[in-house]
Image (cartoon, rainbow over all chains, first blue to last red):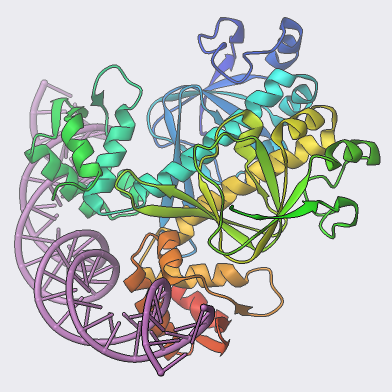
Length: 232
Length: 232
DNA sequence: CGCGGTATTGAATACTTTCAACAATAGTGG
DNA sequence: CCACTATTGTTGAAAGTATTCAATACCGCG
């Protein structure tokens, strides 16, 4: 059993309704999609879907985070994206394609699931949804490009610094939680050990201060300098 | 002057018409888009557009190849994608966003240019075009993911081998042209020198045989073994 | 033929990985 | 609630790779 079913989704009261995929729908359209929506709670480590699974459903993330993982033929894994609250998952299902990644929860995560086919139908009549879908695709693409340029280029110290900065972007405080060293390594294309060493060094230099278990405050200005490669 | 204008495009006779973006359009729709289409020839090294330029136009590639380049704040460049014949360029313009990359010709290249706005309008009435656009977005995304897992992961030897194999995929022969060492390095996230050393070594091992200036035959099976990391 | 740019090579250095050991931590069952 | 165990994180040392910077070779073009 891979997830806890939490009943039909309560979309009308969903705090996210206006920020997520279906923001532009009329009440009428919305009624049509509401019924088939189910809501799930995922424990960390739970797989929402596997690469190659037939892509019947799309998902929105209500809370938490998932990693999208691809595997090389030699078995090494690479995390190609992180999806978070308000993000949409499984766009490829709109094209009747199987999923392209494993999607695995990194934290306690709540998702809403709905049939891709339905979204496809609605989008054909609803210009707002149509545009929103394109925008989501473009967002994913920009994100992928940023991972290439920022997280897969330069020395390990720089990559780790850029990942940390990315984790606190668009946030009020500079506090953030870290992922496991293994996951961070898989995001950056470096080994678990190198990641651990780098994080440990950042801690010693007070670029990272642990205020509570796995809650870190960042020294943003100095991490920026490292990210740019200005310091050793 | 950045490009040679070759006159209004002769779309009706374009060999690509049925394989590219507008394959599904009716004659009527097509008439509407034909007029604003211009065709350009680009010399190698020519920039088609710059990142941040206002994205008024989209492009299809008739022949040749372009690189999409992003820059880090420290000035290092990373090539995030290669677009080739039948590919579409500038999807972000559909969302009224500025371009996200520099687009630079790698070879003599012919492109067709058309207003993004027009495509947006047509796609709202034309389900075929609508679907085609989604499919193009997904294609770009898959490509980006593949660059992360295949071309930005593992040792330099493996990356170079995977890039070479990628260059001859879906081709009748195992012959291909190589890009400059600098460009290959920017695709793989390694230095020009490391790229050069690796290519030179492959040549010495006859994994690459130069039959004509810059035309190479690949030893696919052995390059595959290197790509998988099975050999030193 | 010579010039300018690209490719190749060398040598020293810096960095990352590997493999192994040990420490810290969280989860489990008594 | 505590002790135990399994997992995750940290560290060390050696080996393997990649980068840097500099020199030289090669190529295409005028």
